[in-house]
Image 1: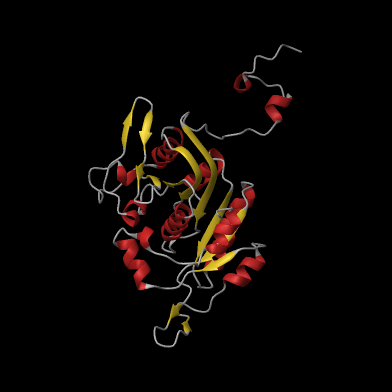
Image 2: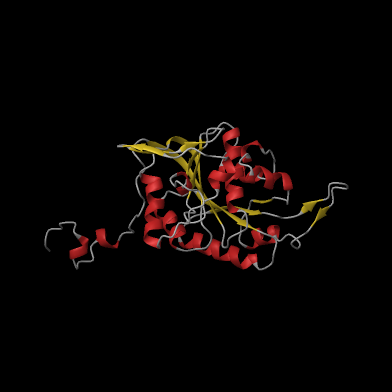
Length: 275
């Protein structure tokens, strides 16, 4: 047998180096130390994935953890608006520096690189995927206890890249009460299984409207299915977020960090953000 030169691309032998699982994990920036990476995903758009990401990050930071948000939704970035960020990303020969929110949450988003926030991002998939990779490898995140990755909807190139390239500890799936969404949840669960990433929690957004007079819960979009959906897919942690005009106003006004709630406490406990 010829001596191995470790050039698998030009070798026909089926040795152990070739047959062992290949890792696609990308290295962090040398000045980054990120301990936990949680991806927030949804099988479809418009369910409040960025809202859940913002709430989780805000509450985690409020509990004293060093927190960051990587906005992987390149063509529809909304994280900077939720946090009211106006400054642009800066950089030097060592890398790029994320913009910090009022609570000290480090944020990297394409909108923080654009001169015009409303400019459309008309990019093909390979460029979008490479941008997400650079947000991980080229950004100087520093010391971070929890990074939340706001994913684009669906199960396409970017979610696949994030699952393969970043050391994801687990995912939080965001859904809504409609029955059709259960099928969308199943797609997200199956993708997580294929990528060997654990599903940590299921969050049902727009779950109900609380009557301001009597406190009754009104199922505007149909009865909640989060509990049975979580049970069906063996997800042991779930949460419900109601329709709340104050929450929408806080997000639209860029003051999401000032909004307090306990709806996601079970999710925060599941990921270990408890003090």
